[in-house]
Length: 261
Ligand code: DGL
Image 1 (spheres, rainbow, N blue to C red):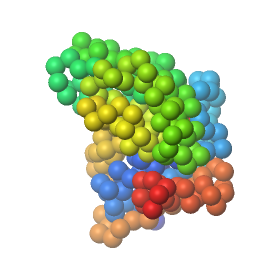
Image 2: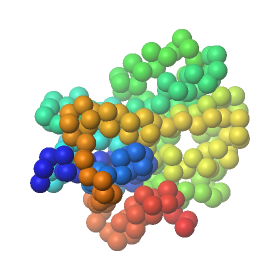
Image 3: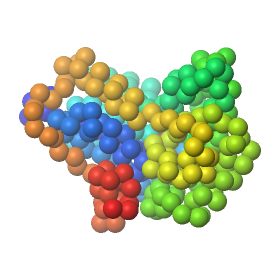
Image 4: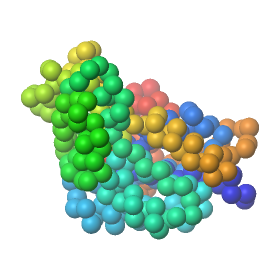
């Protein structure tokens, strides 16, 4: 197979990265994709740094063994823990990571109040601290670790009382005064409606999926790796749990962005 026709490998700790995959497919429908979700080990965000680095390298290797031409780390946690190691190890292909979409959020008005929802690891690691430093003079940035929220998405609970109660607790202190919220974990766009409902319409919500897709396109183009085909490409969904239920959830998220069809 010609290199340009090889698939783009996309991975996450579980189903969340499908929110990025949807943006990739929308922007570059002619590409072939393999998505790997490591739901067996989700969540990553509450594990140790070393454990997440080990799991992330295993995810990447699983995709590399299938001949991918680029790697998209569709997980903020894995990106903050291991992007540097991945880029060193796979220096001959584009390796694209994701980070919380702080930039568009701080521009919504003069000195806005920005809540960044993410896993404890993402918010703790150096990568985010550097990002925050870049923007701290232009906004009041509040880190909101959300352990437990990834699990709602993994078990297919994208709406309902239990989720709303959980979110109300998370937003108890800062929710009312926030101008915007950054979804710094790729699972969270799938519960965006519930987040908006709990916060109210005044809060603008941002996520990094579309920006990551644009960056992936830019890198593929730069490396002469864009698929020249005019036909729609294929999307292969893989999950470390290997169950029919997980396959079905992944398919529904990809096609509909939700489980209610
Ligand atoms: N989707 C991952 C992220 O973007 C979730 C991490 C986790 O598994 O805790 O951070």
